[in-house]
Length: 101
Figure 1 (cartoon, rainbow, N blue to C red):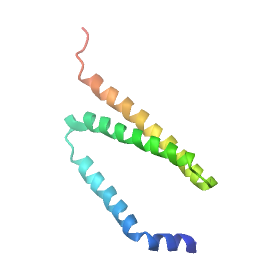
Figure 2: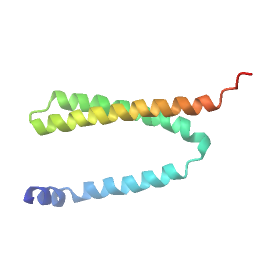
Figure 3: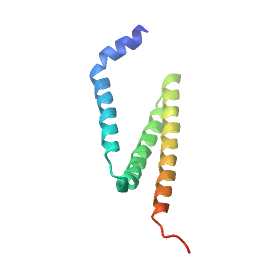
Figure 4: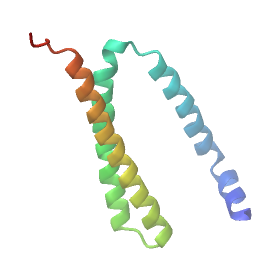
């Protein structure tokens, strides 16, 4: 428990920035018009593709079991996010196609 407290005290500025980024992201996304959600999802998919590559690189250099597990979780969650984003984007684009009569 002391290790966690020491970690948080040592990195409190970074943790503060991450928390502020989360709140800022929520505010920005909640004010995006519906017509822009599809391009936004495509951009998020591209970013998470980079996250997956980074996680694979980190796993390749992992020296401990803990870092290997965290890297594996990053790959799995990033992949789920990319696949889910493509499914949502595809469904949204399907709504704009003309109906067959």
